[in-house]
Amino acid sequence: MRIIGTLPQDPRPWSERRDGALADTTMRTTIGLVTRRLHLARQHVYRDFPMGETDRLRSVKDKREAIKNLDTLLAEFRRSVEDHGGHTYLASRAGDAVDIVRTIAKTAGVRRVVKTKSMATEEIELNQGLIASGIEVVETDLGEYIIQRAGEKPSHILAPAAHKNRAAVQQLFQWDARNARMEPPESDDPAILTRYARERLRQEFLQADMGITGGNFLVAETGSVVIITNEGNADMVTSLPPILVSVVGVEKILTDWQSLMHIIQQPAMNGVGQRLSSYTTIVSGIRAKDGVEGPQAWHVVLVDNGRTALQNSRYEDVLSCIRCGACLNACPVFREIGGHAYGSVYSGPIGIVETSLLTDLRVLPELSSVACTMCHACADACPMDIDLPGHIVSLRKEKVERHRTAKGADLTYRWWARQWATAKGYRRTIRMARFGQRVYRKHGLLQSGPGLASGWFQTRTMPPVAGQTFGEWWSKTRGGEGNEHGGK
Ligand code: SF4
Image 1 (tube, rainbow, N blue to C red):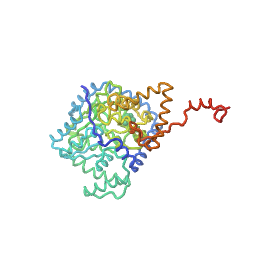
Image 2 (image 1 turned 90 degrees about the vertical axis):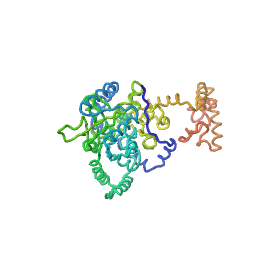
Image 3 (image 1 turned 180 degrees about the vertical axis):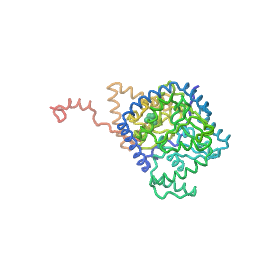
Image 4 (image 1 turned 45 degrees about the vertical axis):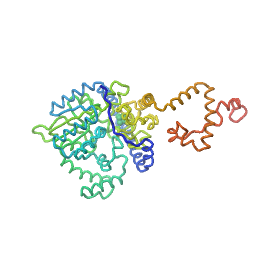
């Protein structure tokens, strides 16, 4: 059965989201600086570590193979987890995943949850589901902690608070400190802000009844969930609370540890230009009887939500995404408008593609047309060789075929194609355009857009039609005979 996923979406229209982002100069400066710095760091790390390229190529191959064998590997993974005392669940849809986690929490009488950063839980809106059931949820990744205080969604899949500058973070923490009756951070020095968050979060780790993580990789061979962080918070989330729930997309599967060894550097190398993330947390079972670490109970919720529908399709390579964010950092559109303007939890080039594909083009189908310049920078940046520009073009085509509602536009393009199929027709349209341009100019209508083209003209400037075409000039001057352009 083909499963069509659901994703939360910003209800505002694209023009409003885009204009809001473009008007926010602080956000644009911050996101521009961060993305350019990360993009540059990625280039440097490959230069300084040539082995990275060999590992990258091997990772692409391993990941493609794992996706081909998804069903077999998921079955192996589930068996291994259960052999080591864990429980596994397969959630077809976002709502199913939330229900599963809520039931686990309610049954165990959980009141307080600490969480690591996880795009899968953003996708299914897990926090909202738990909070609605009276469960307190605290994000422990620093970026997530910041945006949770701000009541926002991540603006970047790897750096969720990339759009916030130091002053904004200090302001949020001052407000947070007042609520928690703590000393507020006395300056916007990143070290002081981080120390404040660490002290605040330590109490949360110690009081939590349940930890929730995402997962960067699932190793089928041993039933392991692998989480990489730069803060070590996953170590705390997986070892301090008695119950652990891992919520992970099914596509994160890998065959074995060999594959893991090749791919484990790729998110950090391509996302932030580090050779390896600072911490690697691996959960392979519940706490041993005489053990001192690990959860007493472990539940792994595997999320489909439209992913398996991409298997054996032209979009299958999308399931290889490791969420490194390199395509976002390279994208000139993302650098200008940031993540929130996309209106989906997934932004940037991969966000355009995934938002459409997971939901069968039901959520924000306009993204492929309005948020891509076709510059191919994302394709150059993607370590998993995902054909992002090719997919965006295909999505545009599918969107036109499936959502062909603007009958007028359709007829206009057909007429235009017929005219430009002949020289005579081409000349006729140029004469028409010249005349039309004069009328629109005279009435100041050119920028607000003539009729059907109004959407196009909202963001573009109409180039003036030349007063004289090359053909007209040629027949009048015989190729410029006798003047300075003619060469005689
Ligand atoms: S599409 Fe490629 S570059 Fe973008 S997040 Fe995924 S793996 Fe990274």
